Image (cartoon, rainbow, N blue to C red; front, top):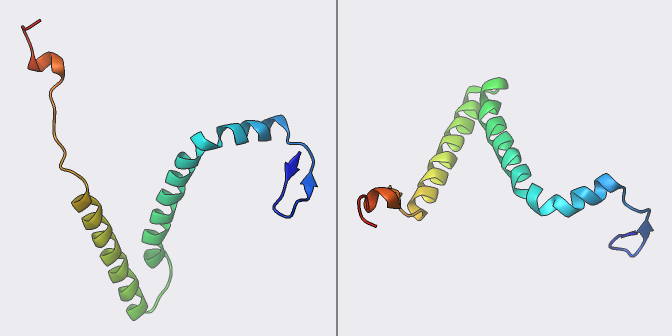
Length: 96
C-alpha cells in the first residue's frame, strides 16, 4: 500500500513501479546529469533561436558568458591538480 503525506492510501504498486522504486538510488544521478546537460544546451541555444531586441540579446549573451566563466573558474579552482600516475607495473619494472 502506498501512503501519502496526508495519510491517505492508494492502490498497490505494480511490478514495474516497485522495480523503479528499488532502483531509484541508481537512477537519480544519471537522470540529474541528463537534465543538467539539457538545461545547459537550452540556455545556450535560447539567445540564438529567439528574436530579442539588440539590448536584450547582448545582456543575455553577456550574462551567460559571465555565468559559465564564473562556473568554470570556481569549479577548477576548487579541484586538486590532475596528476598523471604511471601504473605500478611500469614504476617497478624488473623488480619483484
